[in-house]
Length: 404
Image (tube, rainbow, N blue to C red):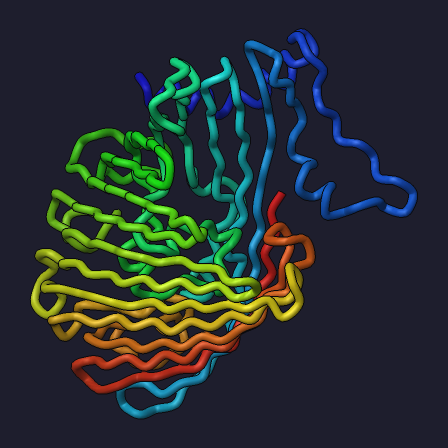
């Protein structure tokens, strides 16, 4: 019943609100036409999606549409486990999403967005435009505001299809990550998972946290609760100087070879963020257990991510570096990113599986309108140790990211 209601609401909310807005007390926010000199295009880009906003309206407070588009090209050159050289070029429509968000009854928010492209060409597949799946589809309730709770700074509940946030890089949206792709160890524990679940989040002073239960049932929209569950704990602390400490723990109560959302039994992550003037730094340590995945792929895994960045031109040009390491107790317990070390280049890299992976990334980001419009350039070196020998590759990256 809840699944049907949320799916129906996500499809109908935007249309209903647009039609109803003129009849609701309060004045809608209308996007202004740009001035003759085109005005501030950046301000237009970041505000154009809000079509109605009135905090005094008791029924509908805001309706906005949003989307993102991400495109990238890459050239990879390397040597496979047999010592043979390989090279390939790739182009990819990385992400294209459209969505809507409705704030209503002062304490509720309905948010849904859909994936509009599936570009399988780097893996030898096809490029398909149009509806692919829901990215997120969730209903949130602000309990603190509803009951005017004074003992906490934040208390809310969310139900629906939502992001699995384990690892520092997973907490960052793809709109704001500083590298073209997240690190391999982050992607292992994050897995780009979108499970259906319930989350309770709270904050008090310097502390913040969330506890979530997800269904492991796979679906392109809202899933049922037919299989097992995944559990996630997030805990954060902000120091007086603005530095942040973040702890995540995730547990999968089904065998990892029986579901496709996660390929491990449990994992934990601890991360530290700091900012000093133009310099920013993130360190993230990760440890977990693969569970029962069969010979050579079970046992423990672990990793480290170090990510410094520096504003060469404040708010405009940023230099970024990253070192990441993944290791495992078994010979195939970790894996490289699919982009583009183990894509369709004809070389034998043992499907990207091994027991040790070192990666170094260096790049520069040019912010045309903050994260809402930016160009990313980078170079990354990967060295993978496999049971059949070592494989290594250098990837040149160029990407464009935008959202509204």
